[in-house]
Image 1: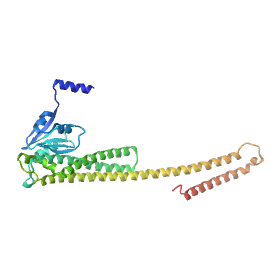
Image 2: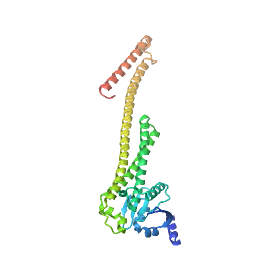
Image 3: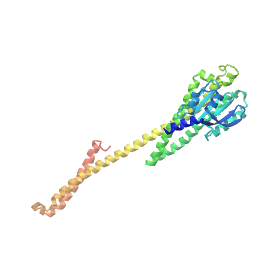
Image 4: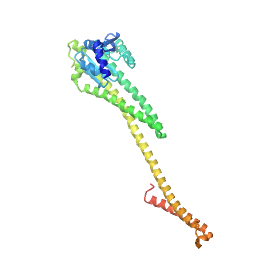
Length: 329
């Protein structure tokens, strides 16, 4: 209710929400500005629904061509690319610093080979793919090292601290795998759809040129990062397999310890029953009642000795019988 009242007050007062936007032009020029929804829509000519999906916290991974722009929602990157400029809508994100630096250098220092020169929209797309795939690869390398250390410590000593550390790593592994799979699925979707790739040739649209004849360069660009994200996923799958093997090993160790405890309980229980029988027999012969047999104290050592020998025999016999019945295997 309080949030609704604040929203109504904002609308009445004419306050518009603005975002910090970093703009990189086709010539390498960079600009930072505060822009509202309508200004971004006017500048990029994207639909309101595309902008709303990009700015939503639950938005899906998207690389989509529109009439005059490419809409990218990839990991931490929220970008709208036109034929002349790229707008990054979350420019205050510290992780975008390296992306903007790489993008700027890619524009002002293009490859020397003329065959590798891409139109501006694909240079921007390449920068976004490079940033997201490299970040996922870096996270997977770090997780790979931490996982091996944590799993080794857990197999060496099973305790609450090591178990908690492994649990956290498995949660991170699951989250990172889901993120990488979303990127891979989106790249595969694009590569399987020629119409979507043709829609992303913004420069050709301005020049009224056919994009079908040179669609191979976009396929090569997307294919290269599909291979990279595939390698990242393979590394994550390796960590998952190692985690499953470690879990199986830990379960086997715990089962073995449980079996040993049960065997010990059987031995102790048997010894306890025999000991109680020994105490009962000896107690009967030492009771203070007037019977001639009980008055012959010379028989007491023989009785006690016989009870001890009988107890040992019964215990050994019980253990042998347990083993014969495979109760202690």
